[in-house]
Amino acid sequence: MSDTAAAANLESVDVPSYTFSALQQWQIAFIYAFAATFNPHQEVSPQYYKLPYFTPQNLEDEIQKQESELIHQIICSCIGNILNRNKPVESFKNSLQQLITDKMKTFDIDFESNPLLKQNYNALPIDIKLYILYSLVEWQLQDSAAVKLIVDSYNLQDGLTAANPIMARPVGTDAKKRTYWQFGGKWDRIGPGIIDN
Image (cartoon, rainbow, N blue to C red; front, top):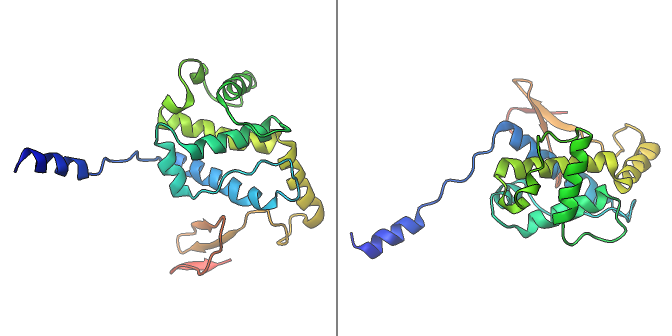
């Protein structure tokens, strides 16, 4: 085999991607579920900064990159909501660093020291980047006036009934009693062995 053919062969070999743990897969699902649940209801709370459209696979792929416009947009939207900003956040470096420091003081994130004091977000290991992203989504539920307005509006209007569009419901269970959930889009059919709820 010539050197050129060997080099071309090496270039075509897929680089193994990061393997996400069960916890990390859950974090990705949580981030996606938040966006799929709240983004369609911006008309209820115009101050809510929508997260960009993405799929769980997009998020898995983009979090592995050194720099990602999708991740940048998600972080900016989250910070805008958490800090209840009147104008969209365009750059997150200082805001994110300060937010992590503040949340460490209230034990809302489990870091011994702020990793953003030593390096920027894009240079962090994948597991730390995902943990920060997950935390940002969670903090919107506790700190964002816009998210609270959406929740309160639907809870007052529909309560905890089936009519409440932001209340998550399982789509079914299987023979092993595992529960299946669907966020975003429509569940066109129940898969084999899944009992419709």
